[in-house]
Length: 291
Image (cartoon, rainbow, N blue to C red):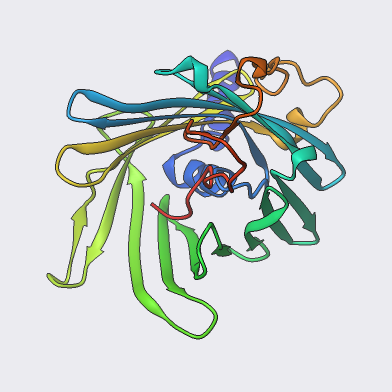
């Protein structure tokens, strides 16, 4: 009887075990304010050139939610290299993001100094998750992206179409195809492959993707390589919406962090990368869609 109970518990544990495909499909949208299931409460970014740190920043997000509507009240930025550039971006100043859900779809919109910065929709009604995203940024043209994610046999299939254009032109079109699987040699690490259309073959990506759980927090990490020895380490700390927006939500601890004082920089304004300015400018987007 004892062995039978142990066997049943083993099956239950295995049933609820998460893999790379499931984690990526939940965490990746949340990193862009699509708060279906999970919400980002903290993000760290380190950019390197070889061993030299180009910049080091941590962002803490304070969210408020009711029913299926969540809004950022403030975002605290901590600069690891130049603490004098620490800053807080407040909703009252017109810089925030808002996510809403209805039926099987969600919508996201973010604002910078009262102006629309990006927006999009997420559809999770079927077995394929679809995100349509428009980034307006500080430019006259928009960056439009469609992402599709589908899980089959513990493999995440990921398609991304993007182009620049608005309102009358289309430029820099790109179609990318990826798939993700568990790394059999490293626990909680993922292997990512992309399709090389020139060689007509799948090629292993140099991106390092991993995850871990700490209490109610999912820690989602990615190392993204750029050109030569330039690379970025991006880590998102995410909490289930059912935990974060419940009245007993102190386990994550991040969204209740006391903002840093910016009184010493009175009369000056910060962008999200820490630059000081004599007047307000639209802040740079906190998360970019796609890899």
